Image (cartoon, rainbow, N blue to C red):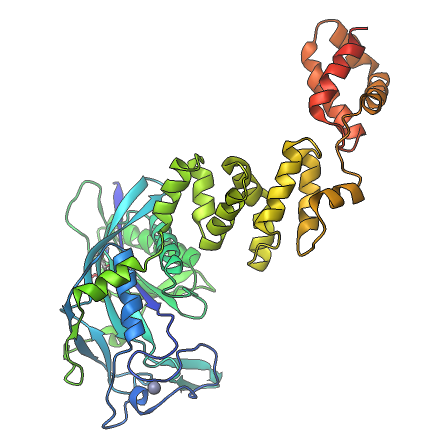
Length: 473
Ligand code: ADP
Ligand code: MG
Ligand code: ZN
């Protein structure tokens, strides 16, 4: 039997604000436990929440970047449950009237190519604290620094058809959120968390199968792994004639296993109701339009522009727009007069090595441009330029000075070329014989040998005539 996998993702993202969602406490990771707290986020009696405008701004921008409709009025609701890291006994969230609904995200599926994943809704909520199980032996400690941190939850439609597609969705979503500076999306620090819903059904069936929800993955790679394990388990159950039970599963990164949560832990009736401490959130159209205008060019639009305006192949465009600093650096190099495809090659093959290590580009765009100009006018070979490039990092020495210092100036001088050619021909009598016998494609071999002999300094355009002259005599 052929089974189809169906996946929908719920992603929680912490917003990049200075303070928490409903109080003035700092919104910061890594402070000593329970030092970033106040009566509001501790849920002390009489303390009242006040919404953080910047959090609403970032949430609205995220919604607009995902093509959602932002509602002029949304409502904060209390989601009631008991857990030690939830001081108030309820979480302020949004339920039946979320900030935004009905958006979409275009992703590149490894199996199906470019496709659109629907975004069901995006709502604002506050985070809970953290239970620490490894701090004291046999006990659980609670850190409330995170309690009340601002979050958005982004819920997708069940539009994905494989674990790899789910990963592509996450990668693209993160890219958009980073471009818009909405979150740092650091999964290890918990600023991006994924609940992955998966079901299987017979190929061709249009009804959805019973889903399970997998939690506790600490990387996108592990989301893909966990979904694969859980999908395979469901297929096995179905093949054996059984039925999938709707449960929540926990992924264990160490073992790669997925096991059900104890059912007690997940049997919730949240008894949602509008929070009486917070009036409905009313946004003016003008304010929403301002947030729209504040969005940067998004990765997809940038990729299109790099292909149409700069004439780059799709692969290059995709690599360059992966992160905003890379795209900005590329455009700055083009701005300095470098032909776009050459600039793209330099950024992808050379400049990105340092960027991936240090997170910055240490050769300024104008210095890279001056190096490319030296290649263009024949002062240095492309090979030599690749050796000069790293020397330009964090230094004021000009490309030409580096070329001179390293003895990399290209030699077009006919006497020098003639000397190398003579040596190469003397060292390869058999090939000379074959060339003279009609195997003219060996010219490429000779050019390569001369380049080698000259340690990359010979001007390749000038070698060939010298070779031909000597071989025909
Ligand atoms: P719940 O009420 O259990 O949270 P929702 O209907 O709100 O379920 O959906 C939560 C997430 O699960 C969404 O991302 C949705 O796309 C996804 N989802 C819903 N039904 C299925 C299904 N049968 N298979 C896979 N994913 C699903
Ligand atoms: Mg849910
Ligand atoms: Zn507080």
